[in-house]
Image 1 (cartoon, rainbow, N blue to C red):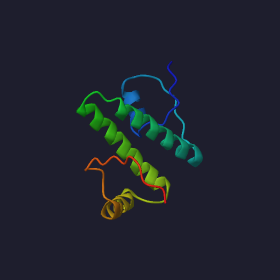
Image 2: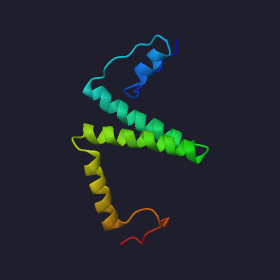
Image 3: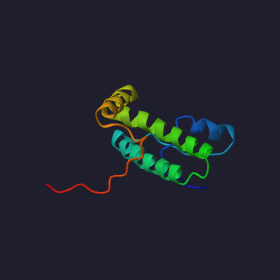
Image 4: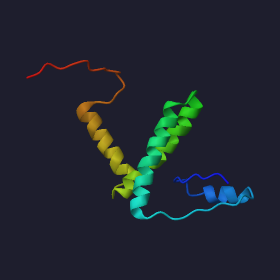
Length: 108
C-alpha cells in the first residue's frame, strides 16, 4: 500500500472510498495543519513551475488559490482581506504586469 503522508482536499477520502480502495487518514492538530499547509503550498508551487501546458498551469494555480484561502483562515483572516491588501499594495507599489526587472540600485 503506497504511503502518502500529506494534506489532501476534504473530499479525497470519499473519492477513494467510492473506488473501493482501503485507506487510512487522521485529523491533524492545529500546529501540524499549519505546517502541512505551508508544505502543500510549496508542493503546488513546484507543480505549477513544472506544468507543461496552460491547462495544467491553471489546475495548479487553482490548488495554490485554495491553499491561500486556507492559509488566510489559519492566520485569522480571510481571502477577502488578503485581496484587499493585494489591491492596496497594487495601488501603492503597482503589480507585475509591466515585467520590470530591477538590475541594481545605487548605494546611498
